[in-house]
Length: 406
Image 1 (tube, rainbow, N blue to C red):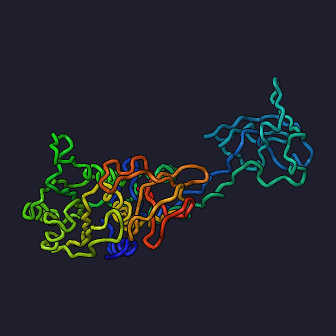
Image 2: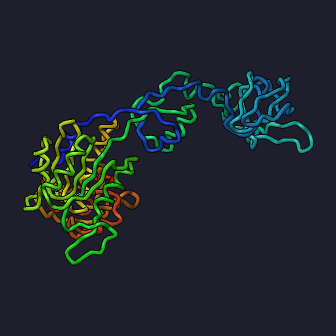
Image 3: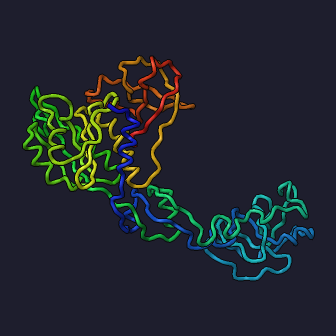
């Protein structure tokens, strides 16, 4: 039996890209970017006003000039059309291009504008203290062309998920189409004679199928919809007949039938089909009976225990990290945070329990759970905390590792 860190290392070593494809930016939300992105021009592409105010020449202020005639008003998206004469200034709005030869923008609140005349007076009492003649900050209230990026600069060079800030950046850079990692083809199989569809009438010995929906929801966070789904009874021949046609899929997810009971046929059937076992059983609670292997075509098989909370734990610890590695993303790392209450050690295994992150500074509050079969599955939890195998009881404020459900 291996520990969960060893299991993570094994599956990351089997990570592989599922290919790449070009998508319109409108379809890229949540997908993993798979190309180097460079600036298509300087950013800002022009000297840009960072304040509403008045654009003037520094030499005029250095010469003692404080009254200026407003030559033109420049709005964002427009350029000046009139030259600047001696003693003149532009009234300018935030984001507007600053004309050549103008090297200062005086904030509107540092001026007094004529109510009936097109002139403005700089108010020396409210000008910045450092803005004394001969000591003006360079390009006061102006973002200079190219100070963020130069044309051709690398903007993104590592794989990343196309989330709001990334999509906004790609649009700014004119990337109407992008190359992304292709999503895997996933086959999902749930098992068990006791398991019935959610809409079925349930007898006293039956339970509704929650794991299908739990795992499909977890996959949808990656934009993945299983290409195949079926439910199998605890029958080795039927299981084999359902698995054989989907061995070519990139990932196979199975729930139930992986422990040591008479009806637990999954490990035996997988090996009969030529799936190479990587490991069976991890020293964790819940999720200990987990089985993992590689299909003849190189696809990865995750055979999970049937208890719903075990599925959540395994997705957070194994399947999520495997997808990160396949897509070339940085591996998710746990965060060390204090525990909000004390906790008793229950087993000699690494124990994962549901917690809610709350407060300032942040603390982890355990969520009550009546074993891994509890249908509430840590309702309200934001992630998992680890009670290490080599630790005794945890005191309040003890530091623990926190894993999100992402």
